[in-house]
Length: 162
Image (tube, rainbow, N blue to C red):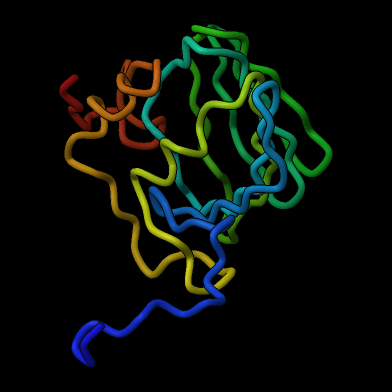
């Protein structure tokens, strides 16, 4: 490679991504299970969405978050756990002024490749400098057997076209 395009470092973290404003670290993956350690910025919320490929569960390690799963809503802190059955609309909103940390557990595996397509390898184990949401997010979600159903919990007026 030329000097203008240096060879990537041999020590990037292939199992760590900056994606959708979060740091995601892959802890384990098989066909049946995927475990992702997620560091999520303060006051962050993904759009209301669903996954049709399987179940998603969250285990809160640090911080707190409001989870909406179907018609149920609850606030969870460290040690809190919520399971999202397949095809159930859900979202969350991190609360407070500090990042939250949670395990994102998927059965079967199915989101890591989506996060990789939406982001980039993390250069460091910290939150990215900015939140980048791809303009074609609804299309990407659909490609990974899901659907965007509404705006983030903390931005109810935001329009997302699918």
